[in-house]
Every structure is written in structure tokens, then in C-alpha cells.
Length: 148
Image 1 (spheres, rainbow, N blue to C red):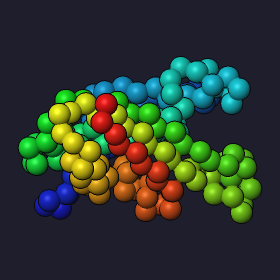
Image 2: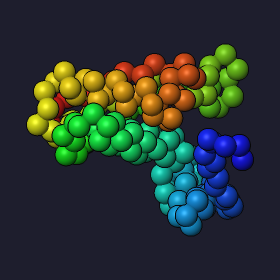
Image 3: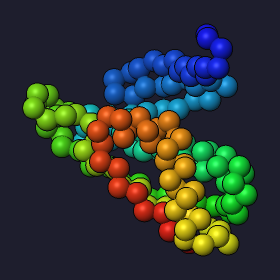
Image 4: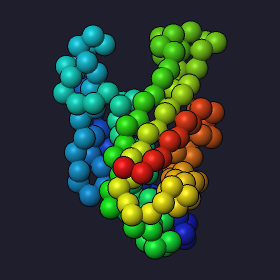
């Protein structure tokens, strides 16, 4: 691995629609589909897991930014909603199989004012690898951070 790079790796095995994944640090994640999609509902579906990763990544980066900028970040509550056209997932070539829109609502518990919350949100979104990956893919990212 080159200097100044981080590497992430997961390994996994499957049984029908269920994937058992092991991440760095020996953490285990089960990803599945609901019965309506042929799964056993043993864990979140892959797209729900992606949105959970977005919430987790935004949390980590927001805490880093808050520390750097002396922002009083007490907590964040996320409500994230993704929309996609299922025809792409089902193989229709002219419809992309990933999210068209992801809406992020964040209620920030803080003593800071709205302008500082906006600054925290902008810096967080610019540095969050999951957010920027979605944005680079052309996903319409609708973001609303407010004081809790």
C-alpha cells in the first residue's frame, strides 16, 4: 500500500440472498433482502446498509470537523431517505440501477447557531467519502441540517 493511503477490506460468504461479511477489526455484518425480494430478512438490504454507512460516515467526519473548528457538537440525529427506479435494478438498460436521489435530514444538538451548523454540514459533506462517492455518481443529494 502506498504511503498516505488507507485501505479497507471486507470478506464475505453467501447463502441464497444472505451475505455474511467480516470487516476489518473482525466485525460481522449480515446483509439480506426481505422475503418479498427472495431473502430471509436476516439483516438490512444492501441499499439500506449503504444509507447506514452514509449516516455513520457523516457522523465520524462531523465529529472530526467539530473538533478542528471548536464546534459544540453534542449529537446528530439522521433521517436519510433514498429513492431509485427499480426498473434499473431489474435490468432495464436505460434506467440506472442506483439511487436517483438521497435526502439527508440531520438534527444537530448543539449550542451553536444555524450559520455554524451550515458550516459544519458543508465541511462534513465535502470530506465524507460516502457522501462524495454518491455525489460523484450523479446522485441528487438533498441535504437539510437543522438545530435540534
